[in-house]
Each structure stands twice: as structure tokens, then as C-alpha cells.
Image 1 (spheres, rainbow, N blue to C red):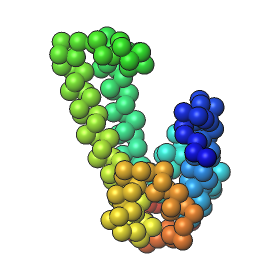
Image 2: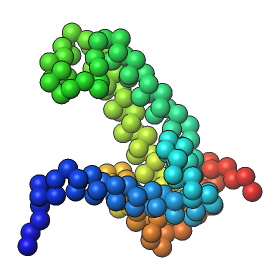
Image 3: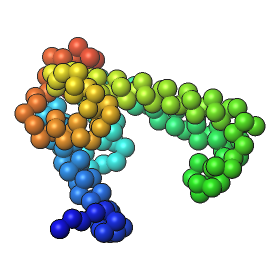
Amino acid sequence: MHISMTDLGAGGIAGSAIIFYIISVAACWKIFNKAGVAGWKALIPVYNEFLAFKIVGISDLFWLQILTSVALQLVCSMNGLDVYAKQETLNNYDYAGHPAVIIAMLISLVINIYVNFRLASNMSKVFKKSTGMLIVLFVFRDLGQIILGFGSAKYDKKVAKELGVEFNN
């Protein structure tokens, strides 16, 4: 018997998303433990992101990503674009009449690609993984973290120190 996602309905999709989220948090918990950070910190939204950046030596880029997101929100709001509006509202927005929005979106996109690539690159380095893992972490970050967290990968403090990670002990 074949069951499709449409057969599952919204409850099945939500349930699947919750299960995937729990597995992702558990993987993050295990990665933090491997890096010498208390695993329970993976449960705290935003802070867990900051720690992911910190354990690979690029916590400053976390703040750049936050600043970029806030700046994009401000530029959009000042130009009358509600980024949380319904899709038809976004489709009818006059982007050509507001070049600042287009420029802000492009700058934000480039910065986010750069930051996420550096995160994937440094994460694969501190766990002594290949370019293949870098690509998995960059394209499918949660899947890469599940592989690192539940796999045999070991956090290399020497490599981390070379990347600028500061250890308290």
C-alpha cells in the first residue's frame, strides 16, 4: 500500500516536521557535546545558532547575519513592503519603483550565502571532514548536522583553535 503526503494531510506533514525538528535538535545537542559545550543549549532558539557559529570560530559572522536581516526588514518597511504579507500582495508590489528594496535583497542574499558557506566550511574542518561534507552542510545543513552528530566524527580542538575558537578551559 502506497501512502502519499496528500494522504497524510496537514497533521501528517506537521507531525513529520516535528519529528525532523526533534532529530535536528538532538543532532545539534550531540555536536555541542562533541565540541565541549553543554548539549542542553541546543534547546534554546537563536542561542543555539550563535553557539554553532562560535564552535567553528565565526561568531562575528552570526552578528553580521542578524544585522543584515534587521537592515533588510527596515529597508522593506520604509519602502512599504510588508515581507509577512500574503503572496498576492508580494506579487503585486512595485519592486521597480523601489530599487532600494531590490539592492537590499541582493546584498542580504550575497551576505547570507557567504556566511552560510563559511559556517559549512569551518564545521567540516573542525570535524575533519571532506569537501563532500562541506557541500552537504551548505546545501542541506540539518542533514549534515545529523550525520556529524550521530556519526563517528570527532571535534578537533587544534583545528578549531586555528580557526579562532577560544576555549574557556
